[in-house]
Length: 540
Image (cartoon, rainbow, N blue to C red; front, top):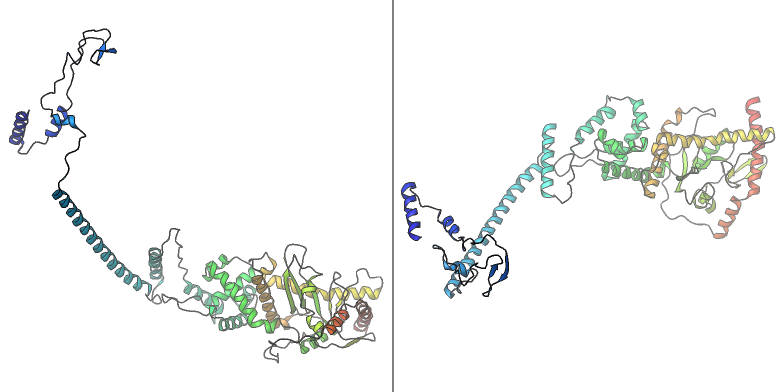
């Protein structure tokens, strides 16, 4: 066998000039010879064992057994294969020491390679950070739109690489807020705007000078509305953009996402602008445009009421509860649409009746701090002003209600005058809702404090518009009065703690305010007075 293999190697080397590699395959074939010859009988059915323990064929008694036939290992098969599975001898101490030294050397080499790899990665990270810093600190003011868009994409990749999480990364949108500010300026606030004053009045609900006054005061009072420079050197949103987004949401009751395409302001930022804008308007202007009437204001209101046939009339009173799940608004308005008082509460706990138990509208009357009012009607003296209301309210001395079913001409005339004048507060509500659709529609926020600030801010801006446009209102009762403001002697609000009257005086004032006898007497005197007023006005 060995001679045959050597000859094959020599033959292959002579003819092919390289060593043969078929020896392994040749030896594998020789390891699987036919160990036993084919049976001599046609039957191979084995039914029993012979005396030596080997199977024998039932039909052939001459089948050779192990005693008669001995297997012979073919030539070329080594006897070592019969000892397969048996281990070799144990390694010597020198071999173990050599193996351990090789393992230690390999481990040290792997540690050195890992350290070198970490150093290389740190160097690459430092270089990448330097490149990223150059991109972030690049001056975008000198770039054109294409360069700014490319710069924004690079910033997006940097943010995704350095601040990536398992969730989907937030996509940054290049809104070109600088272009949005320039477009807004060219459309409404430049010296030659695209849209004239009447369109500005329609879309912003006020004159341009009023809006610019609000923007200026709000920007000076709250740093949030001031334009700042961000970390990459870009200018932030301008005060005009933030205030315009807030006014569009108040005026049209649109979603925060609806102002994005024109003002170039994100949804979350628009919501934040609205909340901060209403809070700033309430903080800055509430002391002037949602104040309690002082002595001068009361005298002007009394003169305006007397010109309409109701002496000592201070305004119209009503609440905004409509029998549905809504937010109740209690308000007092005069005939020039000025809203003097607004109380905001939850409809589930307040209605047209019990809202008076929580409203502060009569706190000054009960505490004796209300401006003094003295007048005489039909020979009877009174010292408390009154409000015109509908028939659902209490019969208090401070309320004058209509007569539901009048039976004579004087009472019919009184009901006609009272209901016509009381429509002014309904008109004030209608004008407020037409100017600010957010008041009319469903609420945009869940927090009651946010809703209250939105309502008060709308009323304050409404009063600012009334002050500016009061002279343009058509009225058949002569010119409307001018109230005190910051330039016409309006005193500073009292920020200290107000004094309280003794409890006995408080109870006495409460009983006097709730006196039903005084209520009916005042109504009867006004019936006679309206009759005389009507006759003197139209027949003399």
